[in-house]
Image (cartoon, rainbow over all chains, first blue to last red; front, side, top):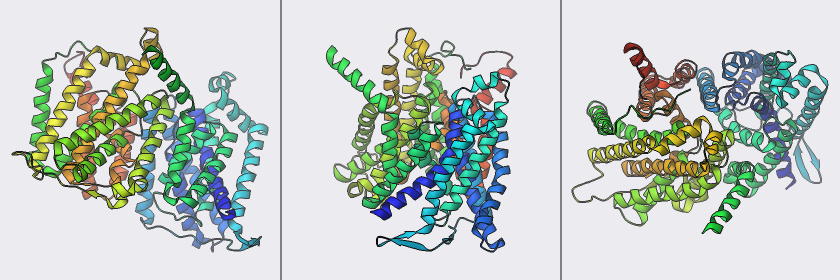
Length: 289
Length: 323
């Protein structure tokens, strides 16, 4: 059971890394950004390519992968996302999905479709109370907690963070102060993309890396963003760990249902208002009959 | 913004258009592989049904394929366990889609925008999981469910031309139904709700009822191509109900032009042609498709039919085109 809980925390941490960027674009620009899955997958493939070059030194390969994905994230923001601001939801979805499709195809083109294994960089486990804890997973969870603290600091203390946090509340209000909101959004977009790559790289030794990895995490991450409240960063943190735990616990007892249970939770959250309205309608219809 | 126009289209033109559509599909059947064209026809019905929900009422859904899959699985199970008569199987599949849409629709149409799209996605995922593993005893999971149909009178549905004629008749019938619905005051009402739901409410309409009705109608019509799929292939696997299938439907409708029945059909055929021809001849077809979609979103918002209508109206001077 303790192993399951640790697994849940690990998944939750990875989901948190991935969902921050998604949540920010959702909250600030009302855009469902499918291209986030592409940055994630691309970053992991960069990492896999850099690993032999830097002599299997994990942190350096990770930093290089993040640095290389930053310009790509910027290009996507500048030429696709920014042009979609104020458009209806569907065009944004199609355009970012097209980017995801092209990115996935590019990965298949360059690296091939076969899954790429990455070995555990730490590999030592600690034994507590007779249970073997892989140290690497504990490290992932701790780094997610550290990131949460760092982001809290960023959004409450730094100027860029404060501006974006204010724009999440009221975009027009911030523009009225004479600030170029787009500039700050692209900074935060790039940060979010970098964090997705970080999460992907940290997850790579545990999962298998294949071209469609971005698709799989996207669906679950949508659920995280919805459950946490779109653009609510503390909510995203909590819901990432809650849903990670849902995946781990469901997976332990009923392995095929793990992802579906996440969607059940998402549907319940989305429909919490609708159930009440439906009940009212039904009783009204009953009263009339 | 598209304005709402009803007047220029005369009812008698429906039959002319049906003849053109039927002729176009028969021509394709003569010149392309019949297997492909049957597949196109089935997909065109699915896209048409989605057009009512998305194109006319403006509700983007990521869960439309759920009803397609439910139709396919119900028809297959009916063929295997109850009777090999294809017509009853179609009726059973469509009825199952209608019942499910009535129940789910009652709850989901009360959400809007992204929540509506994603809550449908959630239901689609649940349906996919049920087909792939939850109800494995009935659906045989990933292995798929084979079925066979019996001949009815002179009609043998193991014979491809017969299936093609059946699919084409269904397509024309769905087109006729949708044309009548969208030209009626109800059609004007759902298009008005797309523009501004609050104003429609101010006029005293209970918008919920019309949205519910549209959802049920659209989903029921989506179950029909599912049943045809089951009859045509004689085999149903969880791929028919996979949530990413919705993306194909949305692509098709945007390529053709949403909010326009001709656009839905043109888009369905164009998308299937692109994905069949490109996928067999060009290795990097996904990249091409992605680039094409970016061009569509940024340059040709109204799709192929919208583009054609613009060209035509420029050619004829500033005459208004009914699209």
